[in-house]
Length: 188
Image (cartoon, rainbow, N blue to C red; front, side, top):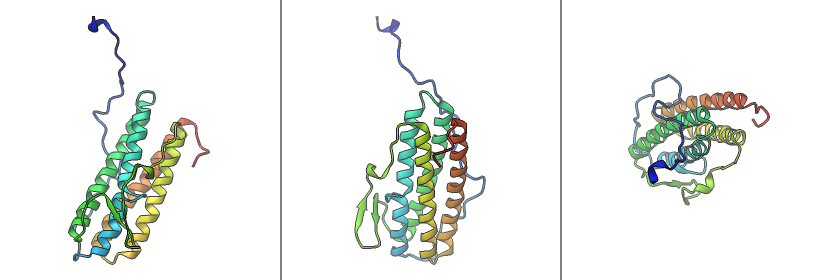
């Protein structure tokens, strides 16, 4: 009896999705010396309110909600999320090399620690609103990375952050293009 029943399925395939990022190599992941203060700054980029973990979670949530009806858009969003995962992995390596811990706790400059929370992400309902929120998140990340580059006196760490910024800028361009394809030019 079960064999004759129709099943609900999602026909959107993610098999060939690849990270959406600049076609440039990353500098080697290395640091000049251990520096817990630098590790703490990067922990905010790793899992703070504006962070790679927040970006990944927001993108995956958006991709899941779009995949049934807007497959090409969902595939692009997943590709961006995959690039954010690479950023998070590189930040984790840097934090470890700098003598910090990777534990989903952002070590804030005021001495407090903040555990990552889903309250850090934006969950709009409409695809155009999702893309607009993603663009704002990318812009916030770039500003935070630029501040951390000014605060970190280690060219090897900053080279990685500068390379990540290139991807974030590329993501903004891609997201704006996706919004134009949706016919929504007012949200960014």
